[in-house]
Image 1 (tube, rainbow, N blue to C red):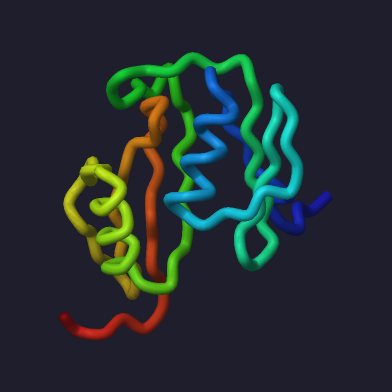
Image 2 (cartoon, rainbow, N blue to C red):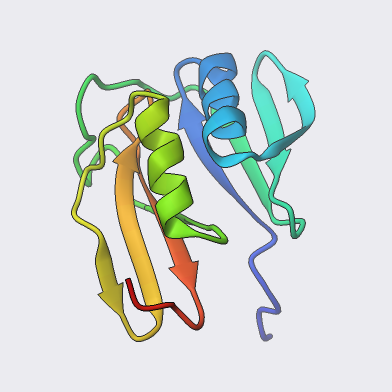
Amino acid sequence: MKSLAISWVGLFAEDVKKLSDFYQQALGLSLRSYRDDCAIMQTENGDCFEIFDGGKASGQRKTTEQQSMVLAFEVEDIHTAIERMKSMGYKADSELGQYGGHRWIYYLDPEGNRFEVKQSGELPTD
């Protein structure tokens, strides 16, 4: 058997509504379906991101035992994304990194999950 793609990724949350609102507002994900126990969102290119109840929020960055996977969201322009997060009151959880045609920066969502905002491809010189 050969895997063809990642069909979807999911995250457990203490407050599904709060976290789905955050990802919609901060990253522009579109809401496809919502119930109290599950929110299904989609990126512009159709990738699926789901949030399920049953998680536990943290007031600080979760440890690797609490969050064993980090998600990366591709954006058109990393600097626009950084300004968007700053305007929403979110401080970066890392410095801006760059390697091999990629730029990235990490943030924490309202429940302490660490995620990456990333720009790939030909990058202009700053």
